[in-house]
Length: 129
Image 1: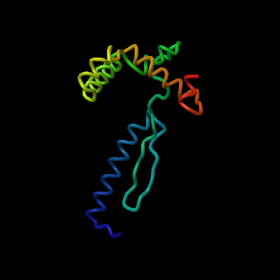
Image 2 (image 1 turned 90 degrees about the horizontal axis):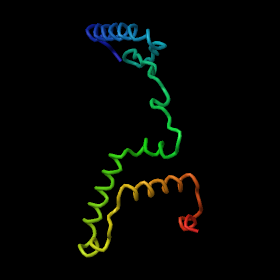
Image 3 (image 1 turned 180 degrees about the vertical axis):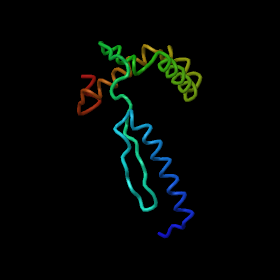
Image 4 (image 1 turned 90 degrees about the vertical axis):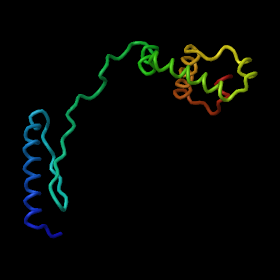
């Protein structure tokens, strides 16, 4: 590929700016990795953020569950599930379907789903035996 003198100056300016910004950030990381393409050199920063859990790991399974499913998210699921049930059922069916699901029902259902994923059985019916 032929690069004109003007384009060459632009590429050189870009490389200079990238090098200057990379040198400033290289203090906190291992430094930029240099990769080449047919047009210009690219600099890719190393991942510098902390890794691993950013919250204190709870001690009980229930606390871990509540870390994944906050009270607000469970309430939202409850409201939307009941709204959906009302939309798809006739008014007679909905009136017979009492009480609507609540947060306790959701916790039980989601907990059971997690356990089914951890303890795999050949058939769904096997969980009820």
